[in-house]
Image 1 (tube, helix red, strand yellow):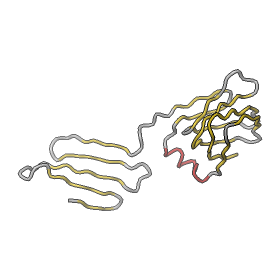
Image 2 (image 1 turned 90 degrees about the vertical axis):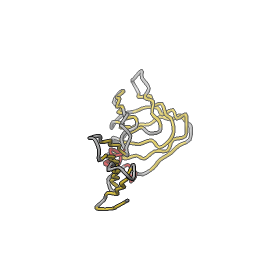
Image 3 (image 1 turned 90 degrees about the horizontal axis):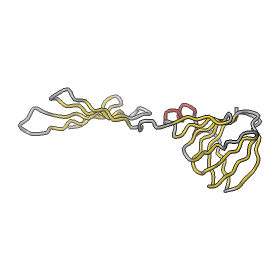
Image 4 (image 1 turned 45 degrees about the vertical axis):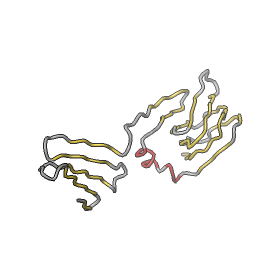
Length: 153
């Protein structure tokens, strides 16, 4: 048995023809974070599985550079990252000064950024959301070809 109504798909499954037991699976198809809900007619067990993985994102800040490793897709959607311009470069090393705050999301690549006046490098790579402060000067050391979305403010 299956039904579709107002953004939900549902599937009922009879576990045994001679049983009054059944399970029901709901799938929210319109959510930006699709979810599955499995419930049973017997017992009070309910299992909820989200379409978005548990966020294992971690934020760090070094020399004013903020990095969020693996931000949730919902955060990227809220920021409108896919509508930002794209930029890329091959492996190289070059100086850079930020005349405005830049937020970028790396689609691929690996970079070590060496902020001027700091003894620490900031390592960024594919899946990182990064914020560089206005006025910062640094050296980019690109070890793997970079492709990123970016936005200046």
